[in-house]
Amino acid sequence: MTATTNRSPGRRAVTDHGAIERAAFRLFEEQGFDETTMEQIAEAVGVGRRTLFRYFPSKNDIPWGQFDQSLRAFAAQLADVPSDVPVAEAVHGCVVAFNDFDEQSLPQHRIRMRLILGTPTLQAHSALRYAAWRGVIEDYVAARLDVEPDALLPRLAGHVSLALAVSSYEQWLREPGSDLTRILQLEMEALRSYLR
Amino acid sequence: MTATTNRSPGRRAVTDHGAIERAAFRLFEEQGFDETTMEQIAEAVGVGRRTLFRYFPSKNDIPWGQFDQSLRAFAAQLADVPSDVPVAEAVHGCVVAFNDFDEQSLPQHRIRMRLILGTPTLQAHSALRYAAWRGVIEDYVAARLDVEPDALLPRLAGHVSLALAVSSYEQWLREPGSDLTRILQLEMEALRSYLR
DNA sequence: CAGAATAATGGCACTCAGCGCCAAAAAGAT
DNA sequence: ATCTTTTTGGCGCTGAGTGCCATTATTCTG
Image (cartoon, rainbow over all chains, first blue to last red; front, side, top):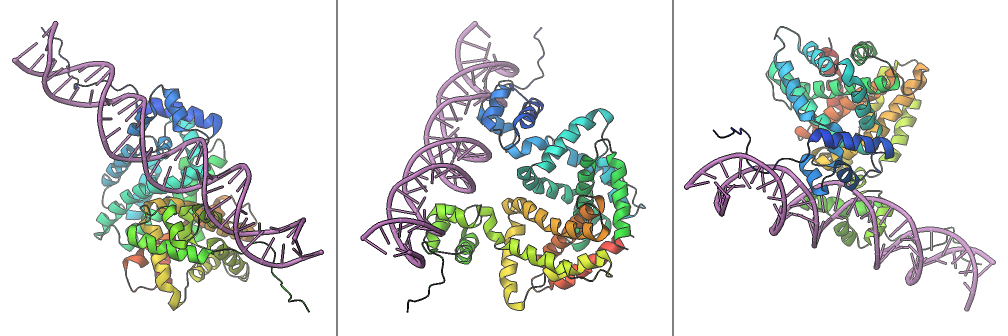
């Protein structure tokens, strides 16, 4: 009886995204993002520099981890909202849910966001990730209103939701023990009253 | 009588920002932004590559031209608004004024913004310019409300104003003959009704 | 067990942005 | 003429990112 191996053939991967992320974050904390080279990260992981670029398309992508997967969950959550909920309410509710993390993953999330929002190089790169995030909202709003995703209102909803989210993260990072969910709600109310 | 020379001593500059911008834009149009090297721009201007970096801190900064000066005008315009005008109205009015261009400079402005908003590399870099633009709004709102510039409302006002502006530009670029001022007004109304 | 097939690794060499350094060029001032 | 000031641009380096490809590790098949 042969040992049933339900693995695909080929050499086993030497590392994974998580290990690279951990090594990289440690170096980023120690020396700063711009001062850390891919060479150093590769050495810390115990892997070749070339291999790093197979796991992350760029150094700037490391702090974002598995963002693409989160986006799929985000889209799924939006799709699950009953269609009798007003669009703006559906979007805002899912934005809040998207940024609701368990108690235990909060410290890491805070480090991640502090790095992303506090490093100019990463602020710039984030624009591309933000665009993908907005795309999810645009598609949902477009579907709900039966218009094109690049029409005025879907785009506006995407941009404004992002503005609110980023603004909330900045506020959250400024106050050590604060609650992100609460701040998101607070900012929405602030926006409404600001425009009145 | 000696010829009075009220110039400062030293070698005369061989080029200027305008000339570099024109040469660069022609190349960007012809081959695309990422495909154009600083080497090529230098050659087109008839200047050393090293010199280019004295005029623009990076290749990404070329499409933005003299944005810093515009920001000073933006801040001045905000400061001129009578204090009995509601804050949100003052901000929105100045955002509209900031993006009001003469008939003749419109075609070039359209080319510039199409390049910036249509090139991922530049979208990313723009985040840094946007931050400076938001800073002007934050400072104004903070002064008007007598709070810190990094407080919740000034930040939110900055982010939301930017969201509205970028969203408007995207809409403006989509419709060939459209009026940016009108679109900005339209988006503001759309935002109010969206949040209601 | 001996290949054959498959999949990940990582070295090598290259392009390009960006920067520090510094000598040369071009101008006014004495 | 010489000194001073300012811009230029060449040189050489670092570091991100990429294409190419031989090497290595693993499963599959006869």
